[in-house]
Amino acid sequence: MTPMGTLHLPTLSVLQEGTGASVGTQQVAEQEAQEDAEQKIFMQESDASNFLKKRDKRSPKSRDEANAENRQKLRADELRREYHEEQGNEFENFVEEQNDEQEERSREAIEQWRQWHYDGLYPSYLYNRHHI
Image (cartoon, rainbow, N blue to C red; front, side, top):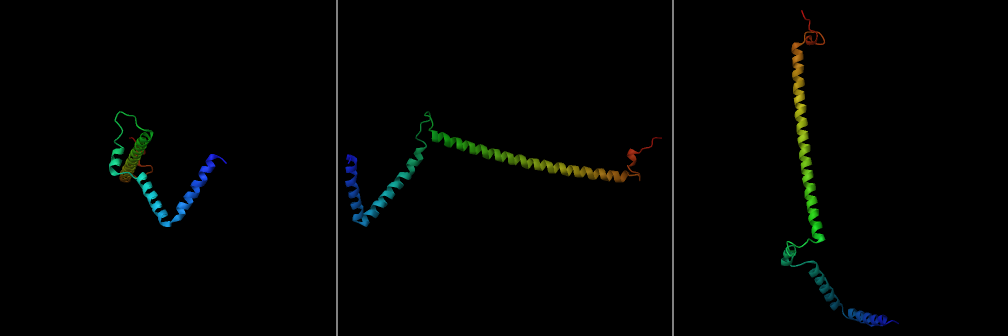
């Protein structure tokens, strides 16, 4: 046997005896472990507010901080691009509607002019003028 093997066997048996001794102490140990884990995950409000301020202005940014900042910039750029694209599409639709309305008005005016000036011949007299 190795010296390590002899060390592990008694500790395992002691741990098994200690955990099996009473259920109440096991539950208390689990609660303490859970509280320790919560304390490691969550920090105090004062620590959290100071967390972002603790870096000196002249010191280089950490990689995580730079990545987070780049993600924010990329997201802002994406939102800006989507907004301007949407505004451009709305303006294009508006211009297209205006042009369609103008074409329709001018077509109606041309049609009325042709009806008024029609002399019974086809095409109308404008194109069949007889010069005397």
